[in-house]
Length: 95
Image 1 (cartoon, rainbow, N blue to C red):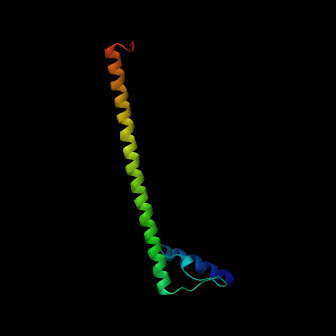
Image 2 (image 1 turned 30 degrees about the vertical axis):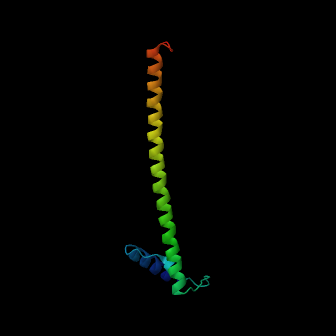
Image 3 (image 1 turned 30 degrees about the horizontal axis):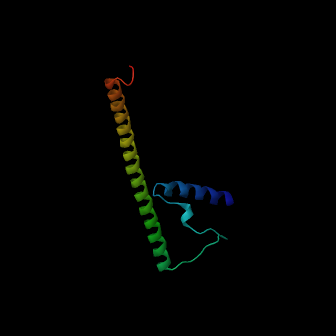
């Protein structure tokens, strides 16, 4: 009998898998659970959305800083090359 239940459970899991069904959505026997109010749930969702927004904003800022750093490094290299050319043309540095 127990084997029949296990086979049925396995078949059901496989069939429901295509619907995005997740066995973690159900409370198991002797599982510790909590109950929250709708207001508390909304606060959790709002908090999560705010944190995601902050993370996205930080990532965008990082991308902008990285782009600016790259541009400044290229500018430094260009200025070093111009400085070297100026010194060479004025005779301060031998080629």
